[in-house]
Image 1 (cartoon, rainbow, N blue to C red):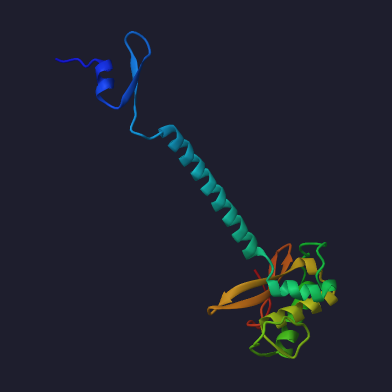
Image 2: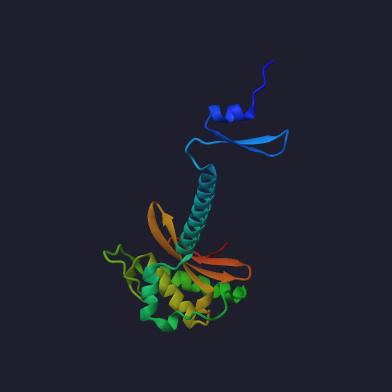
Length: 187
């Protein structure tokens, strides 16, 4: 049986050996790469990618949760209808549901559905698309005493197109006012 002398092995290969004690020797192979730097760089790269992924998901959730830009433009013109402070929900009651149902029916009957060439959000119009229904219902509910801060304008997709509904947050769920439905409903 042949034994390999570590010193001989180190000279024959691209390896550096260090004697730890009389019986033990550690050897490091040298192949032109600094493995510790590669490991550190790889770990840092993974950490940076994880942070970027987290930031992207945070931005995406903010964008998807944000009010539509056209609603923000509407609020700049009608600042009195868009307060930032106030209750975030209202107490559900039979009179509240009656009021919401009345506004839903009246506005749905009053506005003639029309496809707009320019996306201008308006209230109290005789013709318009879903956003005009939403803004008219929202204005009427505000005038009836429902806090604007308890209402949200929600964008969804219907048949591949954008669609807007009004949502009133209550302590028992959300009341949805949609011009494509005859009645408002609690979800």
